[in-house]
Length: 227
Image (cartoon, rainbow, N blue to C red; front, side):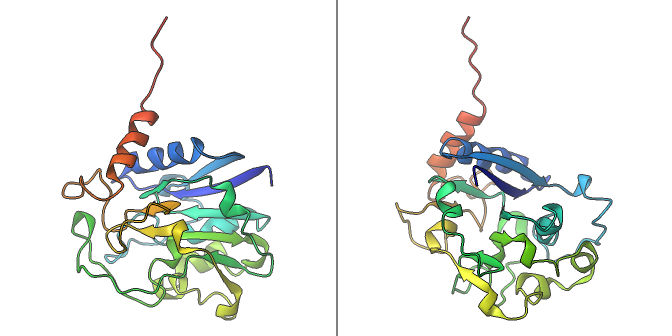
């Protein structure tokens, strides 16, 4: 796998998050990466689901189109945009186990806050945040058709009810989806996830890892203007 496919959720409320995450990945990856934004405006032919008032991002449900968009072939990574790579994402692909249909960080926690960024309700359910970073074994995810993703309930999708059972869900080290503000600071976190709100939102400017995010934003804005 010399080229790794990474699908990133794109939300018009946090455009900067998408680009900074991609920059943080590019700056550390030892393999060629191919980015695809999960962007509603380009998914209209296959995704026409109505907005749900409980969804906090535009890609809450469309993320599950990744296997379909990958032609049900190979492995693809989905990531929420409010993340920052602190390690080589190639190492994550090295953890692939072909016996699983999908691999995730299996969080076991209950959110502490009732609200998160932009006043969104902090919904609480089993397998919370498992779907914020998913390694899809696309050939084993054919149940995720565009029709199914358009009509299945949120819990059916986010609790992986589209699989025969939970034995098809492989586990990844929790450091690959470290929940900022829910977990204590961890210098060994490989991907930090600003699940409560990124440093670009008012009130979250001083979140842990914000300095690293700001450095990645500065790098993303860089242009060499010297003659």
